[in-house]
Image (cartoon, rainbow, N blue to C red; front, side, top):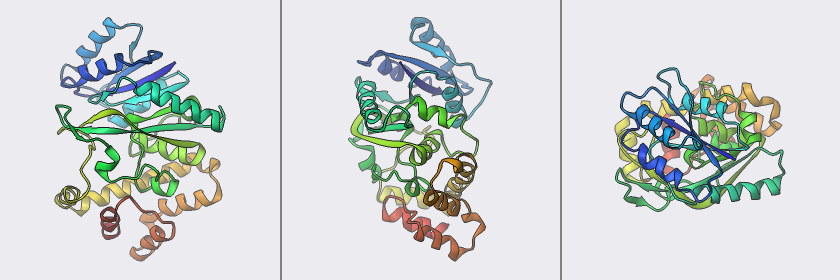
Amino acid sequence: MIDILLATYNSARFIHETLDSILRQDNQDWRLLIRDGGSEDKTVDIIQSWQRRYPDKIQIVSSDGRTCARENFSALLSAGTAPYLMFCDHDDVWFSDKISKTFSAMQAAERQYGPDMPVLVFTDMQVADERLSVLDASYFAYQHLDPGRILLRHLLVQNIPCGCTMMINRKQADCCGRIPPEAVMHDHWLSLLAATAGRIVYLPETTMKYRQHAQNIYGATRYGLDYLIKRTLAGPGAARQRFYQNVRQAKAFEQHYKGVMDSPSLEILRDFARLDELGWLSRRRVLLRHKLFKSGCLRNIITLLIV
């Protein structure tokens, strides 16, 4: 059994297509857990109507008002009891073989690493516009990201696995527990945990359409001129704030998991987590010494300028 964790918030425009794509999966050994984060549109009415139509497949997890996406997914993670869990955004469309392909990769990883190893599997996805017209066949190519950059030193500064493509096993879920408020997002926290206490496996196939629209929390920007313009318009303050979110996350991660980390990883984590306590030159020395780099020269130039 696989629990699919779906967090909704003002999702009325797109949720029908998302739910329909899940119901069309060629692997039907799943249960869908939905938790709303305080929608102000018809989302709750819609998911309740779908739950009445498919009571054996859809379960609504109660919520207590407005919550952010991280809190919503954390609560869903606590509610999930299946041996395997997947995460679903409220506006994307899954290909019919998304579950089966991801689960096959998970089974192969567990055979390789053993049943007691925390495992996180992630995939590529197509980038699509609001009407689901494909903008790029590969999210990683579109964003100029390397899916092989999944070591701790990579993930501290830039998350690579996207939550909406993830499957984790029960061992990973139990190691994670509740995601703290210092986490940037649920998927970033899970990636850090898998990099230090388990294994991350990349399946180089697209399994869904990642819809881009004005309400995306993060979304995708084509790397290059578009990326540079967007970052310039946002100003250095936005980039600096995002970077130090990662630093605060690292501080919390150290407190939670320093006992399961090897000495080299712990040294990298501690040095990164204390960047906000260092001077201008010392901060750059830490980044260079531990090779705390992002994918792409533009991103690293911006980081060195604003940190």
